[in-house]
Image (cartoon, rainbow, N blue to C red):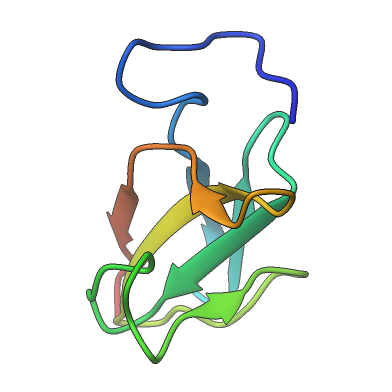
Length: 87
């Protein structure tokens, strides 16, 4: 895992959640090995509903929360990003 902007608390900055349209939500994180997200507002670090991000998805009316992971250590390495997508 390589981060351009490390912080004292987390190794990488929180992911960026962008809703280009209601049905096309994109999540990005520089240097992350894996991004996990939820659509129910729960914490993606601990939620049983967390999914691994791979492509854009429909986020209409959902609260998207995401965190970047380092898969080599299976530890969360970023703060949590949150975005509510309009209905």
